[in-house]
Amino acid sequence: IVPKMKKLAKFILSLLIAYPLIGIAVASCAGESDCSVAGRPRLHGNFYRITNIDGERKIVNDTLDSLTITAFYTDSIILNNEKDVPNISLPLQYTNDSTILVFHYSRDTRDTIIIRHSNNPVFVSMECGYEMKQAIQGLAHSRHRMDSIRVTNLSTNTDGTKNLEIFNRYN
Image 1 (cartoon, one colour):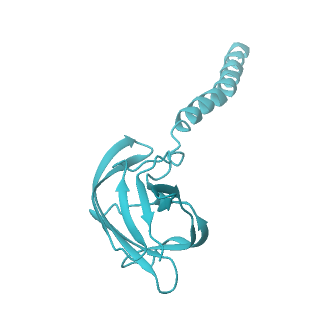
Image 2: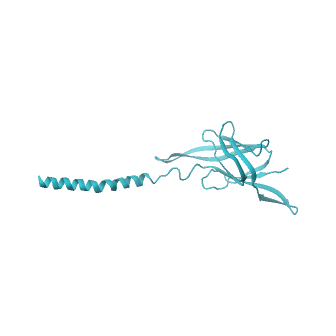
Image 3: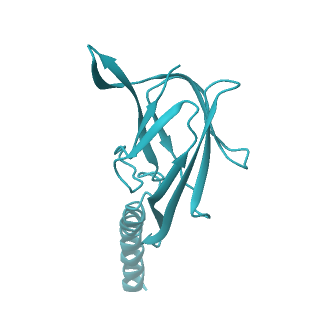
């Protein structure tokens, strides 16, 4: 009976040592994929103004006094009455091939941007599922305060790479 007890004690002791090691190994593998680290890819844009300095046309950085951005035909607010806005970060819709955004500068002054884009799902991993790769295919906008928009990079990104240069006009 004693040799069987020694074997059982060794077996239980080895389980007590092995169990935490197996748990650490499994947890470390599962923890490698943090799906939220990168965030959702967006379009990033900066505001500019064209001025005449000493008779020469120059482009200077611009900051909007106040800005609210909403998604057209929804109750989504992308930016809510932000002050002193030098740049923006815009999400694009996954379910449509175009996104319409309304820029509210004041109660009476608004511009609308229509962004046509591709939506291509790309498999990331079993834990994270799919990520949507999006790219601008066309752009149109109203011209109440916006003068023009230059596309500098077609693909949405998570690293803040500039996609849009938005040129404003002032009366």
